[in-house]
Length: 303
Image (tube, rainbow, N blue to C red; front, top):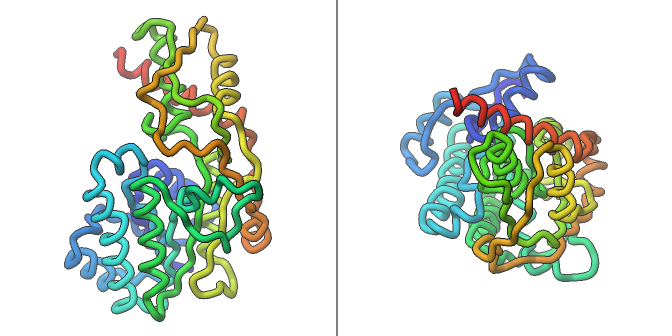
């Protein structure tokens, strides 16, 4: 890989990915243009002019709550935008490896089974977001000749993630409380749900390995995660323990997700074996870095 096109480069994972590649693969030319993947003509022109030999597709409506509020937009971006990219690649850069970042959420109700889901588990999406990702996966897999690799990452978090997601939502509230910007009450959704959590830097290392995976199987799927789960309430307790403020926790019914799955357990052995990768950053370090990010954000907002 010498020329990589990175979509969603200005997003949470995209910015971390660019940093990872600068530090670990400086020989790679990273193309990170700002463009709208829903505009087919512009997307086609970009692929035709750059002719990347690898594409990491991160651009998406990635927050499930946002997808639920605007499902038509989510479908336009996550499905049609993805197809625009793939069709342009097939026409103008057919040798390009197309790495599509999907989501573990496509498994949906399959997580209710007692055994961890594997790459062979049929998708059973429950939310508008998960349905767009499952549809995009299926559409890509139906394109003959596309050098497709599908990744299904577990929850990942870290500095820079928006408070549409649970860990930064907690960290932002703690930052507000410490800065005296809100009463010492932190509101939460369901604290008993268990999720597989990764540090964003570990996710970037996995994606980098996927981009250079030797002998990929056409249409291959890899579950990216730790293979273990953490209780949301336990993560909150760690964050509260990192704060010197005395904070009361209150449940907020409005933050309960309608399709709540008690636990999302994935078998991630295939990805770890195929990519020669494993998560390295402990969750405590991830949470501390995320809280420090929001403390700094609050300090800047006060200037």
